[in-house]
Length: 153
Image 1 (cartoon, rainbow, N blue to C red):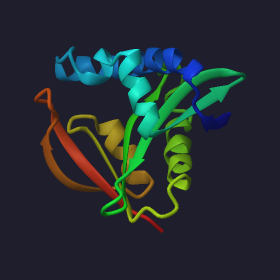
Image 2 (cartoon, one colour; image 1 turned 90 degrees about the vertical axis):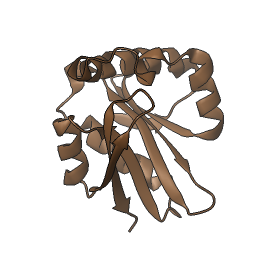
Image 3 (tube, rainbow, N blue to C red; image 1 turned 45 degrees about the vertical axis):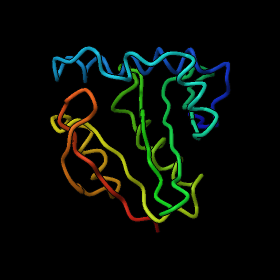
């Protein structure tokens, strides 16, 4: 597996992977209008201008991605849109994407992310690599969310 910066030509694949990966989340919450399923190419292009987007490739095929941006005020780094094709889940790809994106932000004071409060697999993964639950809130679409933090080393 290779993890590298995503390029503009990867974005269509990344959006497709994201839609497949987040479909399970949409079904879990009976909410099929969640932002990761509705995101457009124009929106991900805007994200690429301000965020670091990594892709995971196996034999030249993009199978996953993650995005991050560092806050210039408190030096926290927000991770988002961790996505792995369903047939590649459970193989350590998400863990490697998470650990690799942290390396791109050596000055980060902490890493923060959010996932659905019922997404037990996601929560377990994040806890396994050092994230702790910070608080609960709601995403813009009303889905209950758990926010997690990991102190930078």
